[in-house]
Length: 415
Image 1: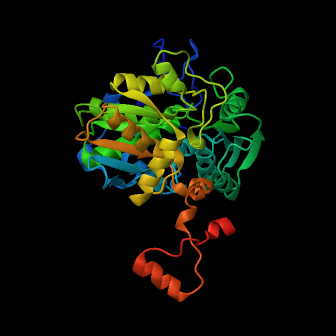
Image 2: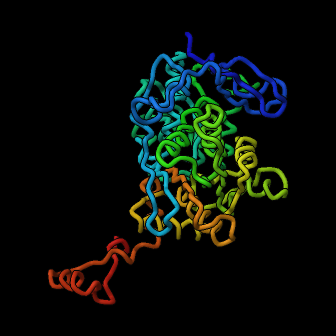
Image 3: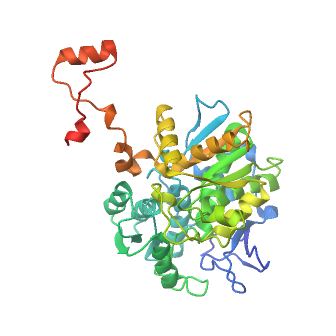
């Protein structure tokens, strides 16, 4: 089947090896590095001023042409200007169909999988990938196998994967261990060896093609910001967003790219470690309350590194306390995010305090997932917001005075 990949080449960013675009080849056969998908601009027929539709497939001329488009209206997410920080905008990816940015990639990845005729898809996940893969596989009528670290996935995400009928395999250890199971099973020498189940982690460069559309939407709405702050776990998303800006520059839509700033939790910060020259981009036993970025060995580390380096950006680490505080600040703005999403605001506040950015700089904070992804965290530390009343008089007192008796008990505590 002609999948319309002829406007792409696959290129190794390390040794320069090039190969014809192929959905089954993901690593360089010479040096083993993950391959990049590069648009051949001369083969792209694209008019920025004449776009049609909405969401990810609005930019179909810059995406792989597939036989079956599997879509649920992903993309076109809100870009919300913060009240507290007048030059900061939140790109709220929690508004995607399954509540995270992963849907942008899955619509392209699952469309490709459906078009090449596989039986199903397989992913390792900290949660959001599992939920998204399961939903889009269900939409396409494909099977879905999800490999998860036992006890390491937020309940909301695990429940989503179950709801959509995924077969779930729990393995001991961390996400890094789960991903190793998948890689060893289906990506032996760099080619997809088990074509019955197509891998759709971010090792797959075609999935990242969907995620780059975040950059396109930002440019359409506010032009090119000065900085884009992105939570970094496995490293694919910050690379994909940078790639989207870079492609628009190559197509003469914009004349520069923003500085990319990768944010990691201090207990799971292998990219910060590498950026500071303190060794390889890997740590053992990553720990953070932000489960979506609890990754110690990011498979896309070199992609993430290039996105930050070539955009003159940086990597920043923030504590779990800073993340939870940022989550509450966003909540006061009406924006509900899971902890990993709030890391982008935590990083921005740290950058402001350290003088790395100026309050006058226009920044976009990528909020990768919805608050309901991790309901347990939402309830933590917020018990004081819920009080028990026993009469209408007490409710009147609350309305009039703004408070109730000091010894009011929390409903959450009772339950």
